[in-house]
Length: 518
Image (cartoon, rainbow, N blue to C red; front, side):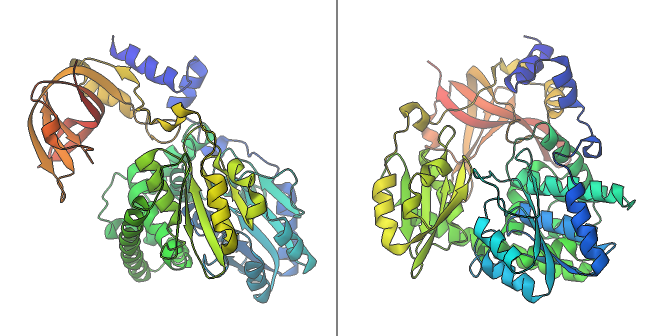
């Protein structure tokens, strides 16, 4: 098998078989050249009518990275030409998820005559009716799945093809063109944060946003991002890994444990000293979130019954981290999972799923037990009266899930000899970046590999490092002790990476699984 054949098979595995699709994959068009997925004119017309009257406009976001970045993009775009506009990020505990009556009342108390929601609102029928009954206009910009009937907003800009920040960027680009404002390509750096952290497929529109957004991110002069990079000890080049596992958790931490308005302030501030102060605070908050998640996850893992759908509920679970608890349960047992934070009268639940099982549809079949529910195939959130929690657990825990879906499968792109791993292949693989959902990092299988010099790493000796042929290999979070592996032939499943030490860069195997060769 030649290097070209390897690349062709990797492309085919991603559904890219025609010359046109391959060209678009390797040479994505700039987002500025992509047509908006909606007609922006009605929203622009409504905004201009409020600006002409001097009315106050509220940007109503959400407390995750997508919602925060969407709010920053739209607020900064409008504020450059119209100062009577303010952002609102809901407080998780005081207002709850998405558009709420309390949040609307806050915006109205500030004098808002127009509310523009970003990353929420598409299923908020009652809240939107309330808003309009108060004489306030409302525009929805949202990417979440809609219900059978759309809410009665003045204007709805909706698509599920990208994240809310991407939709917001399209709208702002069109607004800037129509109004002859300067196009702000720097905002693509915020779209990159959102599109990676919101885990949307990095193909098509989203590949363009990720690729060109990462380029903007790596040359950003935004004080908040620079301060965040410094606090997290990140040096260029910023990659999807840095965004998803280092930057994103810090921006999300404020919304999980405190108030996400601090994350918005960090992104929007022009003051470097203020940016450093906020970045340090977000770093501390994220470390507190990590400790709390670890404690609660250990409790949850020791509390579950291994049914087809895992459910844990406890008073000690902070509602800001129940999604993380559910995700850890899925990671450990490869079953859909629900974690519930029990409140005084009303409790909050968060669910995560596995491929092939639509968790939101499953929850909606028990909507008679829930106060509300929303989400998509892989994640959901809900509220429930405490008196109904046990009924829910009893009813929901054993759905009919095909047995093969409950078996975690290790994805393998290709089986290749270890001799095929070289600098040329590594350079070719890098052209597939940025990696993410829909375009995962290639995984290879090599059989009968001679390994030697096995040693443990990490505070808990949970990682392995060893030699595999001529390469150094690392295996993170090993499921069993190193003594399990013989000093002879093994079958390796791995990704190709690189490691730089003392100025020297070498290729490295990042092991995903290992088995003794037959």
